[in-house]
Length: 313
Image (cartoon, rainbow, N blue to C red):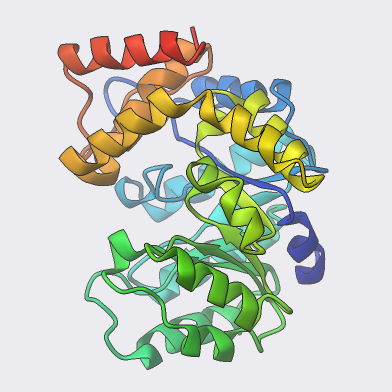
């Protein structure tokens, strides 16, 4: 089992956010996921530069049952083993379900877990957030990646509660998706001595987030262009920010479209876009699962044109 302090070090790199392929009838597509995982590995992701999160928000965790998420972890581990540290997504409105997933992950080879704090009702009292993570932290030995997602939680996790949470020895990372870039810089200053703060907006904010002191960045874009995500990290990690920016800018047409679709349909729409483009890139995005709906024919045509502009196809 990977120790929490080891996970903290591995979060100094790319945190790959994996999509979950489904079949047209909604069943999990194991063969498609195997193709997706090998696409990431062949694109340059490895245990020296990345970790991989499975069954997270972009992996459509909200549309899966607990047993299915357990099964997917076992399948992923059987497919890639120790090639990349595996972080099990444990998002749930029920802390006991998060604990169940975390304990299963601990028993089946995962290197850590990631969890949102309560998100059904906005946690207006920071004690709600603290209590959730406190119980999770006390019921697993795995390293925990906190997940602050304003779009889902309807609250930007306060720095005051983060300073309390960093005292748990197995809370070693944070996926920071704050809408306020200044707040991200303050989080690094306040908890970065004990917690690896990861830029939760991915390549969209690179290499600017490097200057804020984040240890690395999440990447959903690696499902399309893993080699470019790796190249951005390689440049960022050596301080060559101009090169990192140059590579990142090759994906501006995609980023523009993702921002447009996010405004139209939120994260669901962006997931549908990611999965369609992953298919075009030679990986396997597969079908979406309700409540996500597939792109229309007109949207697919728009996305295909963007894929050409970005050199994805």
